[in-house]
Length: 313
Image 1 (cartoon, rainbow, N blue to C red):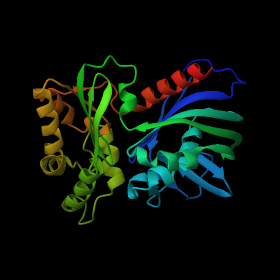
Image 2: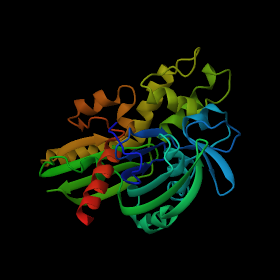
Image 3: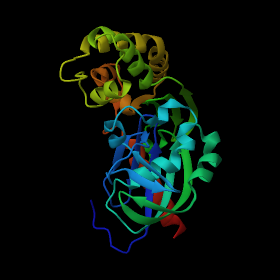
Image 4: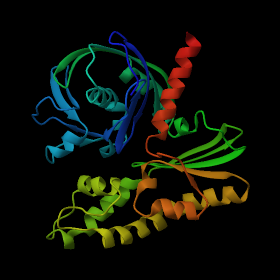
């Protein structure tokens, strides 16, 4: 983390309000990457705790740790827009406290047709209590870009490029020629479909009960299949992964391999790349899996924000 002046208020930032996890990268601070969960349960002033407009809630890991009652971005297609201010304030409540934040944001969205709605939800000046301490927050959206574009910003791009973003709620297929986007197709199937399938199929391991999708997600995100101290879901994961790949991903991956045949480089980003065994499969098929595929988009969004701020200055 760089040294940030105590009186500094204006910060360029990149915000990726994902279905599965949100990523906020504010200039000068470490990235905040937490599950897109919102809980209204009573809690102490933990990271992610917010009091705003007379309502108290918690965003992120603590929402999951507190019990079963939390809302998830992935529960509804509208949540990426509807919950955006809620999750942004929750993300800020994970950072070292400041009395004032003026965020100049570049935000990514799976459907840029909703950019105007998202901007309206986020833009404004707010008074909130973040992790127990009051703060004045001003949010100014500089730009809304299609999901995954941040990961390409500032990269030396090949002349012809195809990118698949393996996200939690969507799988995005994009093609570029000389840095110009030609195709951007979101498929409404992502890792969440796999997680739900595993939760359904693991009953025999879990005393006849459905698995908890949040616990399945937690272990897979950490690169293993230990659902709990007593339960390893490796066999269920392997069987469900195979079905999920055949049913949903094979077509999209096949399109990328066709593009490779036409001379494109093929890149992969998104949290799905980190599923146990998946990276190896992608690389075997000729994909370049970007470094830090989960946070690559947010890092690029921050760089875009900095470029816009510098240009306007």
